[in-house]
Length: 213
Ligand code: ITT
Image (tube, rainbow, N blue to C red; front, side):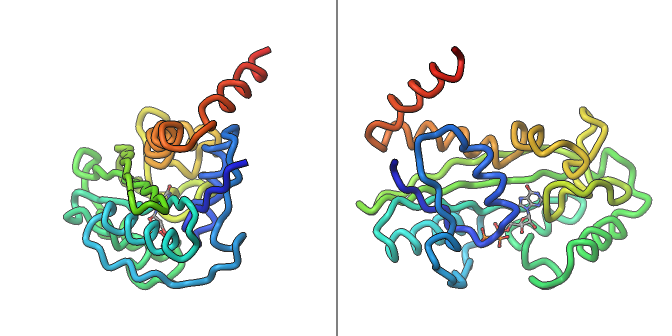
């Protein structure tokens, strides 16, 4: 099976990525799986730049095809903060209960229409020949008036989706993984992998045929 490395140290992301890509004939390895523990300096100013930095750094180090995710929450009322600084917002080690309460407090008494926000995810795929391809996924929502839910990770307990009347931390993991920014970016990236990695498409079609019988 083709080996693919996913350059993330975020366990919450990795669980979602494994779930979203399940069924593909690839062996998906995290940095932990391959024993790499490095702090990559994410000094880009956009999600795309940071995703490329992560994927290319690990691709050069391992010589393997490497995927990376850079993602975050943009809150319109806060001029799109925390954005690319989502994991470093108020300090890397600050608990999300504190970060989430801080955002809720900043939006206190602000009506729903002005609480708009989105999760953005850019996935980069770096190939050992030096090519890097990126794909983006976005999900639009609102900042909830209070923290709710314990599924997911990070800012999920404050990201409210009116069409489901709950936060992404309230919904079952399977549902989040069908509709999320990460699911959308990975779905597009699947097409890229099918085009660029020999045999992936045939083997996937076979497994889908098998599943549907
Ligand atoms: P890696 O760089 O090792 O992948 P990281 O957590 O530092 O891990 P990012 O720099 O991409 O990753 O920051 C993403 C942050 O955005 C993440 O830590 C969360 O705070 C937030 N975030 C992204 N996707 C999210 C999601 O689906 N649900 C909740 N919060 C999310």
